[in-house]
Length: 267
Image (tube, rainbow, N blue to C red):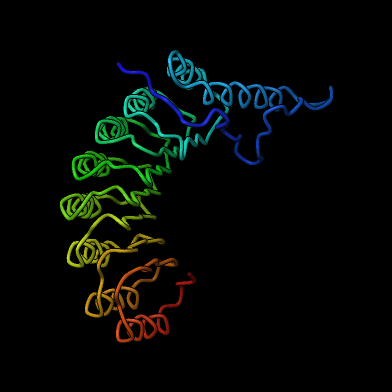
């Protein structure tokens, strides 16, 4: 397996609830055992994340296997090698602590496929952020297959992954049978308006998303009108992102009218 590499040697993983400082000292003698364990775990994770490359991959996965504290792992903007994502995915099979995982850039189809397999058996991960990778349609299909049976994941970010219409179709079909996902971002994926509306049509029937991002999806006035109908009838959607489209004045008017009757959309 090729080594995985990060371009930054300063990446660190914060402990949830407070930022981690690389040289942060352990507090005074009154610090309880749990807090001490958290501080030590955070420091080990910072070192492991900074040393990916060569034997660094093994260090990171070893920390994942020992982890009993860390709930969020973010390796965003670190040029993650696809094989590093595969190694992390393998650990997710048994991990019972990590609830949020953020990976980019370059995990590729291989990494996405491995994560998809892991999601079929993982029972704790609720947030998966793969924004800015290039998983393409094949990677999206693997994630979609996992969504069909996953009963835990609530937040999925696939922004800017080149999934195209084929990948969007796979995600939409999976969404139709998934009962827990509440946040989805498929913006900037080279979708046609029809592909983007396919997801909207599924969600009109499903009505569980509280956040939907369709930025830069080729949506015009007609598509905006259909989205407006969805917004008008949804009682749960509170965030809709449709920037960088071509909805024009007519589309904007339709969306505005929908907002007037939607009682929950705030963003």
